[in-house]
Amino acid sequence: MITEIGEVVTVGKFGADESGYAEMLPVGRRFPERAWAVEGCNGVGRHIAHRLVHDGETVLDVPAKMSA
Image 1 (spheres, rainbow, N blue to C red):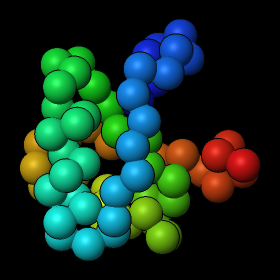
Image 2: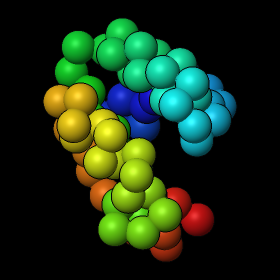
Image 3: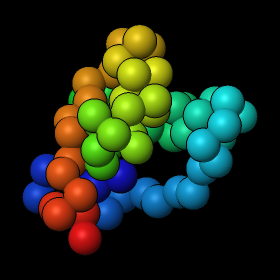
Image 4: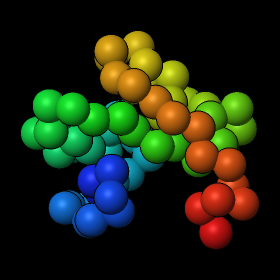
């Protein structure tokens, strides 16, 4: 997780399966004001973005060029 000024406050590595998602969600929810940045919401990141939105989270699409 990073702040709006780019300060890293926590990092994590989570699986792409249901258990990885279940581990990831509470890590992010420790922060009351949050948005999830997902690379390729219309491509490879579509499934995680959809799950987050379904769970009431704010999701921002990050183009692949921006994450490189």
